Image (cartoon, rainbow, N blue to C red; front, side, top):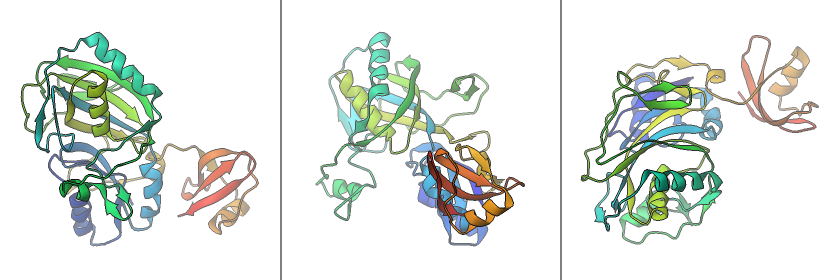
Length: 303
């Protein structure tokens, strides 16, 4: 089964997984992609055979509301690390918007030193904690949209709600909790939609560099993963099962009975489709995930 959890501030993604294991009484539980302890929001949990979907859940686009503070940074690039003061610099809204637009062209980005990336078997965050950070190579990223919602003198929580362009700041919306402020630093609240592998802490770091100052992530909310947003997410210990078809955004392809049997046995189908496809039967039961090259469909995962 799949479940959407609104991960609370201060919890690690692993702690959420452990709690779900206890609630369900099973060990086979995974998640859709790590949310740092000082971030909250949508974390999709998979249990049992649905853990086969984890790589595809992690590959979905994600939407965030990010609080980026300027004039200082931390060794972790978020509100958790040791503070590093920078030289104050006055930033205008126009140059901030111009800097944000540049991310839409970005194809690669250096991950944060404090990340779970492995280099020759060593986790980057482990090396960073020892005071010997690894030299990380740039990795592919994708910024689908980047939009400034508000620029103010200090980081403050604002209620949020879904709007026509994505989640936005709105009175009477969902309450927001941020980490304790590290100081009175000018802060931009930015809505981002990004592809897999994009670190928002790295975004904050690089945004500061583009503006000639230091910056860090003073708050983060994941408002959507794939087709699931905060409205479908529950707070622990409540668990509400989700249909995978309501989570994954790849197109559906309904198979006839002979094709269903072939798909269940991993047989390539002569269907001229491009990209990832969710294969379903006449009852809209998810059978498999396949990938097409424009001429045929190769079965990637049977469920």
